[in-house]
Length: 137
Image 1 (cartoon, rainbow, N blue to C red):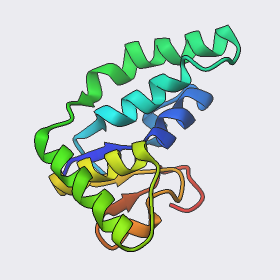
Image 2 (spheres, rainbow, N blue to C red; image 1 turned 90 degrees about the vertical axis):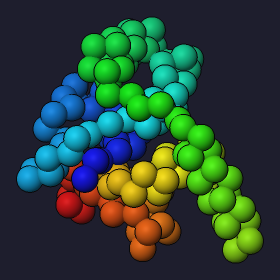
Image 3 (cartoon, rainbow, N blue to C red; image 1 turned 135 degrees about the horizontal axis):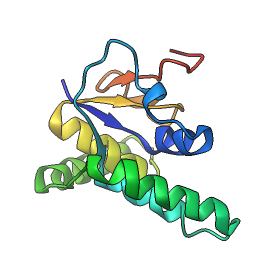
Image 4 (cartoon, helix red, strand yellow; image 1 turned 60 degrees about the vertical axis):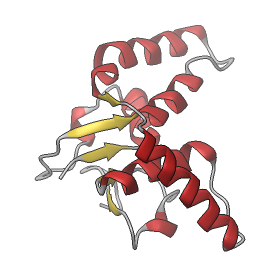
């Protein structure tokens, strides 16, 4: 079953300067980066932090992540609108990029590799994976 990679994993890979070690052992994938996770990561490459850090993140994206980016499809968009409506009905909300990433995974019935708890409220609907070296794995 395909595995989507959340932005939290991309950021961790950039900080640790290692991506492959974050992929869970025994999980064959294929792995992909939802288009809006790529966008969220790229937003960070434009923030007013040190130029050398922006350059390093941009190079990692170009050299390693770019080839894994999957397009945002019409069915992903339909799922995003349904998810946002569902959350609103419950009086909840989710950050836009997180909602878009979750919608992509839900629309495709894939797994999601994460480093944080942003998607825990959807764990009954999305199989969440954690990197091999992550303490909660």
